Length: 108
Image (cartoon, rainbow, N blue to C red; front, side, top):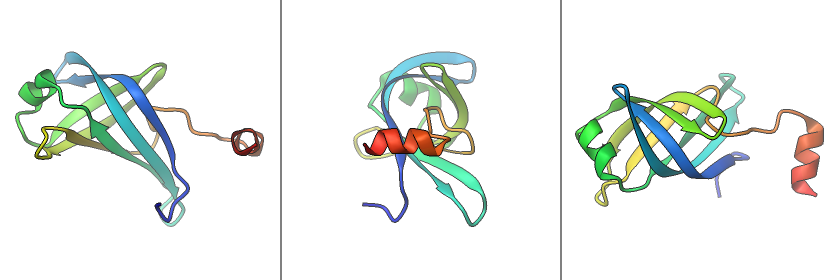
């Protein structure tokens, strides 16, 4: 378990790489970093030949859409199973509770 309280999303997403939309599956997590005031999110993109071809095995700017949520981020080098890590700072591509009432409902 992380030292941070994490939020997350796992499911279908669309990556936009150099104007090309690619449907894929992602697993994402994120947390608010109080020291610098930023929300940091990160995760993995499932193995996908189109993502591999578009990213070319190197860091690549990406837009990610998960349902009604959109964010800009970066793909990093792929792991040995050809899954790219994805990360971003600020608004994540998934819902994050923004009120005490929401947090209480989630923890009930």
